[in-house]
Image (cartoon, rainbow over all chains, first blue to last red; front, side, top):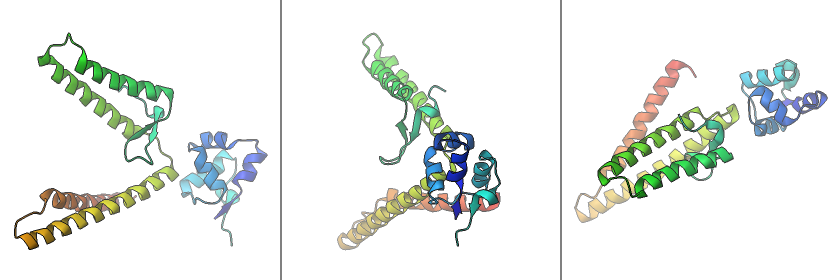
Length: 64
Length: 143
């Protein structure tokens, strides 16, 4: 699964730590999410999307 | 409770328990150790009081550490990593226990004397029971 977290985060001038604090996870988790190395649960995906002012389907997508 | 979860992190590379994360955590460790040392060495405490006082203090410290471990905040990825690490650790321990029981069984067969350590068997049985209860609980609860 791929995502646009980094792109959206940078658009909003958020650091990884700031996004992590908004979502309530460690910065390392955001790093792994951005790199596509970690597939989040629907709850975490939804929280990340909400923190970025977006929707899950706009942030996460299947890489074909 | 005395200590706070935010002063510590989950121990990852040196066994189980806590790792100190902040200076408050170090202060806590020094305070717990210092009080224990003082209780054991201060001369003006009578010997009849010393041991109950020390054990009482250590019991409080243990409960506090357990409370810190229970309230330690972990995010989703950490929980998954920890679950896999604990699973692998339990498999390694099961392997060592089974090898131990097999070795002792072979020794018993060769020598004719009962040499099987019942604690090894009890540990394996405890693992089986814990696994069964966890499966039953989680399947009913719906994780």
